[in-house]
Structures are given as structure tokens and as C-alpha cells.
Length: 412
Image 1 (spheres, rainbow, N blue to C red):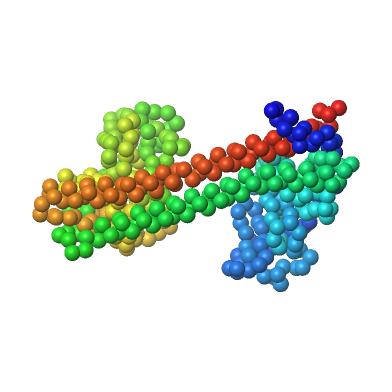
Image 2 (cartoon, rainbow, N blue to C red):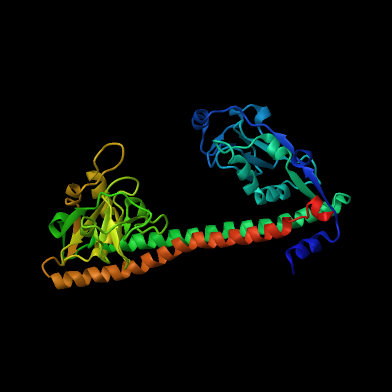
């Protein structure tokens, strides 16, 4: 069945009237409040939500905001500056006065129906806003935007068509929310399971173990100080290429040329890198790729003697045993710094220190157990955004299908 055929079946011969948004809904103003006031007034558990630009919100008491500025009806909030988008909200709220919102005074117009249509056309509003130095739109841009009202001559049928469109589209939104909650709970449980077994295995209670300084079993080297390029002979792995889970990020890849200096910093498979500054400081990554790569200056490469399995240290570097020591060795200043001298003082548990073969066998046994948990956790971490994206695409497909009403010139 064609897209138009699907919509025609839903309309069942009904006409469509296109009306400006300000003739369909009522626009409401916001409240005069600054970011500082929002922060000062914010109270956990307060009943009234205040919206600002982007994802910024505050929760306040009703008496904190003038009564005339409080919206009680289900509404569409227009985020008009910066990131231009629409948000539906059906609890008491207000918003900063550079924003505005719409609600329906008419039982024959479903506010959620209009919301889905505006979400469909968000790229249009973002395009209008992008023409300004700071992306923004004005009230006439939304007020004058045409909204399709199905079957205006039969209000009961119009309500039924709007309700069916909302029902179908909301079902996809709810499915995405349920899936996200389910996978997030599963991911949390797996992470807790991994953390439990990791800490239990690395505690070595009653076992033959010696806590040795990393400086006794490893050497450290800072990376190459060079400017990243869009093309080159080898990937240039920077501190920003390690995510919060110690995995290599595949987006935004940069390169360097393999000149004489760069060749000294080429990575081998299973080399271990640690970020020494910034938001990811202390995060440790094992390089598992086969392509040529060079590591950058804010990374430390850790080379272990044969007595330590690099993967064993990777799991140790995720644990509180490592972080309790690392945080006590961080230098002060504007952002955390963790240099090679400090790293040498961190102590690593070495099982059976007087029997290298038995020690490595025990480390490999621990790695095999923890790798299974890590693989499952990583799979869920990667699968969650992928599943959400698929559900979003499914929602957008049916939204386009259900809201592709013929424009007046098309109908003519």
C-alpha cells in the first residue's frame, strides 16, 4: 500500500483544512526569571517545572512564580533559541520569557496531534532559525505555520482521526521508553555483577599475593606531541578518543604522517594506554586494532614486564582498588593531572609473586572470568543506543506516513 493510500484510508474521503497555528491553539507567555534565579529556587521534589533552553530545567514551588505565569493545561513548549525544538508537557509548568508555549482551548483539537505534526516539521523551524547569528525563531514563525485539521465539517470524525494518529504515534514513543528502561536496567545489573566479581577476585582474601608498585613491573612513556590531521599514514589516537568505559571511539578519527619521530610512537596490538588529564583522566584502554596507529601526548603507554598480563591490569584499572590510589595522587589545578611519576606509585596485586608461571596462569584465569562479564556489558552498552535509534526511525516512518496530508495546492 502506498503512503498516500495509508493516509487516504484513515481519512476515508474526509477533507483537510489548513489553519495557522494561532487559530488552532492559544499561545502563552513565560515568566521573567534568570538562570541564577532558577538555580537558587530549584528544590528537589518541588511540583512546578520551569523550562529554559536546551535541557535546562528547575523545579520550584507554586508560590515562587507569579500565578499568571503558571500553565496548567497540557501544552507544546517552543524552545526558540539555540537548539530549536518542541516539547510536550502535561503537568503544571512555566518557562523563561524568551520562550512560549501553546495549549488547546478547543476539545475538537488534540494538542498531542498538533505536537506530533510540529515534531515532523522541526527541521523547517531549525532551518529558519539557522539564518540568525544565534539560532532562534520568533513567535510569528510558529503562529503563522499551517496545521492540517482533518474533516473540519464533522467534528466527531475529526476528533476520531486525530485520536487514532496520536494513539499510533504514542505507542511507538511508549515502546521506545519501555525498551530503554528495560535495557538500562539490564545494563545496570550486568555492570553491578561485573563490579562484584572484579572486586571479589582482585581482593585475593587469604591468597598468596603481593601488592607491587607499577614502577616495579612496568615502564611508562608519554605520546607524540603533534597536530592531528584529516589524512595521514596512521591513526592519531588522542585523549578524546577514549570513552568513559575505556573503549576506543570510532567517530572523529584523525591522522598523522609516519615520519621518523612518529615511528617511535607506533602502537602494537594489545598495547595499553592511559589518559593522564582531562575528563577521562585515568581511563585505561587496550589497543586491539591491526591498522597503523600512533598515540598522542596526553596519553601514557604502559609496558609491562612478562610478569603482568596487560588485560589483567586493564580490569584492575576499572576497580576501586586503582581509583582510591589514583585520586589521592592527582595533582591540583584547573583539571586533574596524572603523570608517570605518580602512576609508578600505584600498587597492583600480583598473585603468587614467587612463581611467575603460576602468577600468569592465575591472572589469565581472572581475565577470562571478567572478560565474559565485560563483553556482555559492552554488548548491552552498544546495543542500547542502536535499539533506541531503530525505534525512533520506526516512529518517524509512521509519523511521516500519518501526517503527510495533501497541501491545498496539491489537493487542487
